[in-house]
Image 1: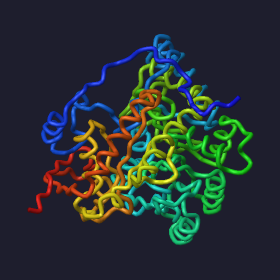
Image 2: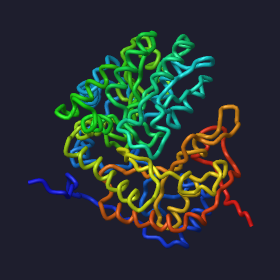
Image 3: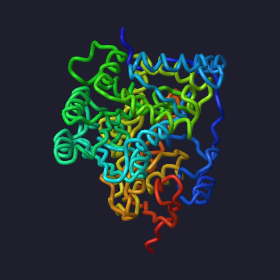
Image 4: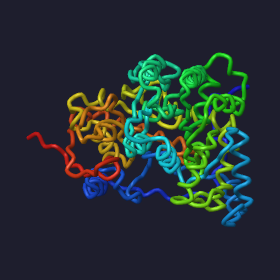
Length: 459
């Protein structure tokens, strides 16, 4: 017999308290943080959906692996366990551990980037784009047309636009050091990339002698969507799907703080021996020795165990279904969301909800602040604040104005999500009264992390 209720495939072993706050307390806290959710102390947050990066609950076996960690500087047994776990899934010749994903990106683009270079992707996320542009290279997004329509129901809205990529490579292949596919596509609503698109992208890249790298933070979730949605994969295991995905790639960057369910860590992997040699030199200069790369041995073992757990069918069924539960409830109440639901997050369509707020008054920021003030729910703006500033300092509206509610892995129960649904209903009831923001202080890059805002008073 099949039951409708999808239970968490785990029991709660340890708990931490949630701070219960009032609206007045939250209004004061966000004002003190200059209306920047990243600057808000976590002790003032009730439900923290800012990111799924490093915020999940590690398993009993991961904590046991931490106790087993060996802290030898060079050649630790923990490195061998880490390396074996990665090779079992991804099969790249060179594995370079880093303290998190953006360190892998920084090393990769420091080697491949530079003025005059162009790095196409389905959609670069914030740190990826910043690391490309920091070298003087140009980051170009080539998202498929379906991905630009938040309301369109399509199975693989994270795909790269193959026609656009072909045109770019025809004109400038000599300037393209690599093509990046982000799986799942974080900036585009957590949407997956199909196996067909990965394979076709690989063939196109290789026909021009250009390597393909996968930004792999949510590789297991992407594989599960292929298992669910792509013809020919319903009977294949996630492990086999992952191995096929990476058979088409020349390398990968990884934040182990997402699907591998660790609190820290990452790696760069490649089949390019010359690139690996240069990357290891930079690793030693900035991260650590090649067999620990800025991580403790205990972290290496926690990541290795997390990789085994990330590809569990029971876990992925629960993970994707519980995220869809939130998305379905919001869609049913008329709250505009990116459809279909992504794997790690639900993306609220701030442009559609708040048409009275112009893009350069940051409707996503207005929505994110309202969610916090009314219910203590912290989300993340993914719109003009994050992506609206060009390298030359000019500002332009982002193609999408979203607020991401990222679900930490194995952290919140259904009652927590039901509470988030109630908060969203309250925000929906006052949406027409929300106003925009202006930036009063910002850094030269990655401004969403530290910018300061003030509300715009039109009276």
